[in-house]
Figure 1 (tube, rainbow, N blue to C red):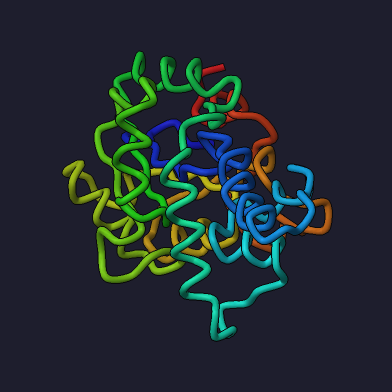
Figure 2: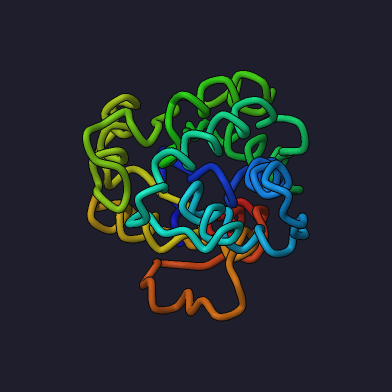
Length: 221
């Protein structure tokens, strides 16, 4: 479907890496620190793509409108920062996918809503990201996804137009941002999506249920 792509941009959590174990543990520590029972990872995993909002919502039923949300979010961030690479790992098939992309002289990068406070040390720690041509964090531009600004920033850093780029993500915000930026979009359904999510309503150009599924769309398989 996308034989002329010159760059592939990816969301991070739920698309390239499985960070749910460390995100969930950071929120669960807040529960156990307060004498509350631990929750299983399966409770946290579907909400991992929503970051602090999702984790605090699952752990405490807390919404951003709650007066304690900001303080609780900072506690969660501190917990996560202390352990964010303990059990986080690259999804199976992703290293092979990146190897094939690079072998075709296609550049790749990351556009995530995760703040640079976390993105930069995390990507330094994981060897896969040494070959990424750009990493754009949620606070790199004034507007995070679903605004197209982060994707435009990534394309500009690569010296390419948006039309030269493909964006792959596991959240509706990713697809909205990609479409608004003028990029082709692929929905990754193997990440944190719950069964109730209707990915077809996102209007992505294509869907993949494994990382290596992208190779066929790029004409590499």
